[in-house]
Length: 274
Image (cartoon, rainbow, N blue to C red; front, side):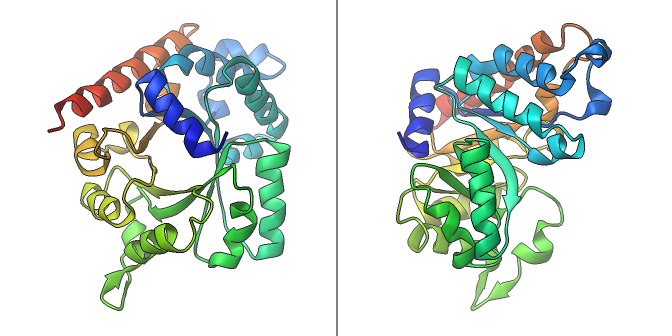
């Protein structure tokens, strides 16, 4: 089954648009995990098991694992999700962007080594740099468009031909790059106005929306500006607000409570849509 089809299935069966990002910072892990052989894996495993029925996807961020020399624990985490929660797709957040021959290696890393269901990529080297990912027709290719960080305007607002760069990226993604129906876009929750513009450009294309929670994105504005007519179309991602909701032995229960609260808030605004 293709990534987008799997995503739609989780939207429907789980009645959730929530995605939990796995950004395990060793300095923030509960102290009692320090004695574990694989503390990062144990942390992520508990978060995954506590929230799997509340999410439409998980999104591990590769930099947190690589910086801790814990790529093996990322592989273990991915395998744990596949084995124990096979309906939940996994997005590898790596934001890859390089020339075609290097992109081929990054694609193999993501889709063959880690067996991710989708990967975040940068479009700024052009189509030939993305083709190696796009050839994996059953995998999702999630293209940076309007990112959630404050400095996004420095580059993504650059004008060309009367349009801003993020608008051009959105149009190209929908018109030129989506032959396999496996392209999605990253659009930050911190820019709700731009989210509405991009939705108008790309139609029902799914959007990965980071920036709620610790970054301050507003859930009501995300739903109002980004949801499709059927109240879906979004992967609303949060990491720190869930991962570090608790710091003691009950951290997984605290994470579940935070995820449940956000899932329910999202669904509340979905129901309020006209």
